[in-house]
Length: 535
Image (tube, rainbow, N blue to C red; front, side, top):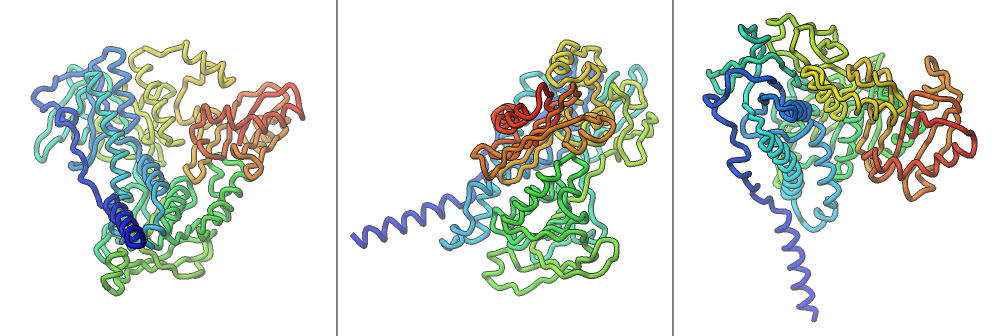
């Protein structure tokens, strides 16, 4: 019996080890990823979409839906999956993978970090491949061809403009069109103090990443420093803590509510989030920033190599404002998430005189048209709020406007649902930012956090000047999540769910389930009322 038990235990360990070995990715069917050769493309299309992210894919499908000949230009580098969704999808996939595995238990079984990371990465790639395959199938079903290359605007004869596509080294093709949508997205802002380390390997690995290049990480870090206090920084800090890393966040603001103020988070929820990160073992250094970094190769022992810890960065942390040295940190991995900037270089904007705002964003009208007739833009490239959800809405709005197919009935339905006038169909950055009910925001922590609409403080302040009451159903006292509802006795312009709890990031049906307890409190305290915020 004892011998049989040992055999079963050994079998279980071997099974776990086999599960952790990286599987060879299944190649997608050749026909699903093969773009038509340039020689088979038409010389002129009704619509040319530049950008293969969710905004560009949505725009291309929308144009095809209306029966317009459409082509999608995608600049995804070779040997990378195409159409795998927004930059943020990687963090969601990594979060999902982190929740599947118990890293301390696997290490206690003798599984090395390299094998654990191989399995984590395989989970992530499965999700990215699935997203890419789904988008590719949608494009194929709607007969939307795509061309892999860099698109650049050119003046044109016989059309409003042309797009020159460099699709192979030294080779290009020019496509003419009366309508172009630019959806080139944004790129991460890098810190000057860490510039050399974004590309310099240390101990066999690049130890400094931004929120884009983090997708190329190839090891499981044990000590992580996250620079930034925004949504992306918070999500990655929580993910690496779940992967059993020792995580430190370096934040310029005095606390998380102040750091997240620009996205409209409620102060109480911000402090709850701050406490939750600390409860997860994350060290928070506020009013701090990175002044310099030095590389340390360390000892290349076999165990160190297995852990991926044969090189670390030593960071000097200083007080924001005074530059007084606070402490020195060591990290296997440094992730900077300090903002994003519109990608406008290489688009040939000068050729058509397209205006760029002082902050680098493309200037657009209420219909999302740039200063060049027939050239529209949507998504991160036109600025805040720089969310995938708002970018997709902008893509549909831009296509509807350029092709004269705006669905007024749908706009009226949205108006009734959200207590907003039909003018809400204006999806320009200015229009979105003027009404907090227009863009729900999710933070994929553990559990998730989501919100849309006004906080109590914002509702009471000009220009709203609402007399509001609050009802609170605390997370610690409810099995369904923490809900903080703000209600007004008079007619308002906002309908706003702010939620925290399992599944709350899906702000639709989850919002209906979670708002009950706090909504009841508002109803008991004031009637009649309009909901202006649910946190």
